[in-house]
Amino acid sequence: MFLRFVRILRLFRLLAIVQQREIEHLQNIQLSEKNHELVAAYRALAAEKAKSERLLLNILPHLVAQRLKEGTNIIADSYPNATVLFADLVGFTKLSASISPEGLVGLLDNIFCRFDRLVEKYDLEKIKTIGDAYMVVGGIPHALPHHSVNMAEMALEMLHEIHLFNQETGRSLQLRIGFHSGAVVAGVIGQKKFIYDLWGDTVNTASRMESHSLPDKIHVSDAIYQELHTQFTFESRGTLDIKGKGEMQTYFLLGRQTT
Image 1: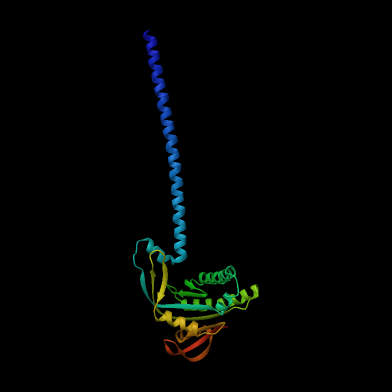
Image 2: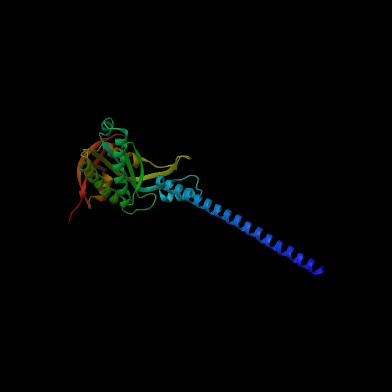
């Protein structure tokens, strides 16, 4: 009788051990499932973060985006020297009335993507597009020793890209370009929709160089001519009465000097 009791007791103990192991196994399965859920949630969060950072970098320069991520509330910087370029498609308003919305957007996208590649090639910074206008700066927010040279090279290639575009599409678009160098203020405005923009007399002068330019011409200030005339060829345009600036000596940039 005693032996039978001992055997039953051992059996109960064995069953208790088996039950405990089953409980632990179920707990491990649940923990594993939770771990998988946590890993999946972490990966989804990391993917969203990466997506947000890519979007931010598409809107803001890398150095500026990094400062925002680090918690800088107000970004406003003064730069003693930068080169600002404006380009505008001639007669685009008239053209836009004759093609479909899809065709219009596709045409602009084709052209501006070409310009975007040139911005990367010459280590410049695209600021924005406004309608059919394209704005670029060199020398900010990261230092670029020869930003005016890089901008001149880009301007010449922009005209070349428009020529290629016309050959490929059968169109006859023309581009008007102007640029100038000087001091600028740069900063980020907006809270929900950020924009990195530039202000100052240099920006206004660069805009005037573009608006007073001619189709398929690169119009520059005397400051650009004085800096680049030993490396590039220019044609004097004489003295012009520039709106908001008065009389200014200006030039057309023609190309790089050949040795």
